Length: 324
Image (cartoon, rainbow, N blue to C red; front, side):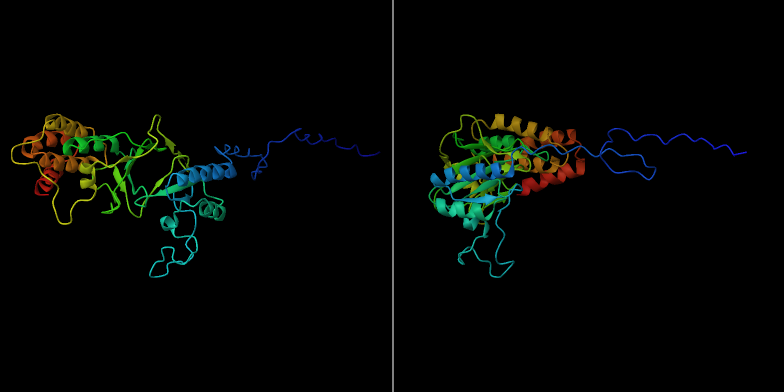
């Protein structure tokens, strides 16, 4: 008699459509990660937009260079650390801000050599405008706009309407034209926390540039041309060598300093962590320059303690400002 066959269930049919992705060791399929979002602009579009804005700036007399999305000069150096450094005398491209030009043929040549460029920089301190830029930061706890307002009030600096560029981080660049001499040096935080200065040898990211964090744009209703730098501001940007900051005459503080005193206290009281010591030192220096140092010391100390700054650090910072 024939042996009966054993009947086994057929294997399950594969699903009609499997999700894409790799297989785990247990043969279960892992869904593929979602596709990244599309960029704001295709690279070619960003490049063409940056070139168009750069040519427009060059047409108005501002020397320009192409920049990467990281806001760095887009053309690599042809010298690879050679000493002494070349500043463009060799005739090749790749010397950073020293390549900046207003000639449209040269601008197009630079952008053609850097098709990855999505922005442009405007060289400061160069003829005919001798541009000076104030970068008022609004990141890492800095409040450059408030610091600049207090600085202007403390030194009687009138702030005219001028070209203003909004940055992706919420800060702004103020443009001023300067004299041919003396050259304005670059600095970061020397005037006050959150205020960087772009002068000779520096550059500003031009409006219309696309960076890794967003686009730089002109502020609404910004003037068409930068205003001349006020003489009082220029004196702060180019202090005489070896001289201390200016102090008011013995007759007393200038009008309006009482309002400035209250603003200084508020500035310290609103200090975020990481900026407390710097803000206290800057505000105390401004108080002593205005002849209100002794009067404001305790109020500034109380404001600093409110932020959590230790008493010993507060007193040491105030003493350092008094000796400055």
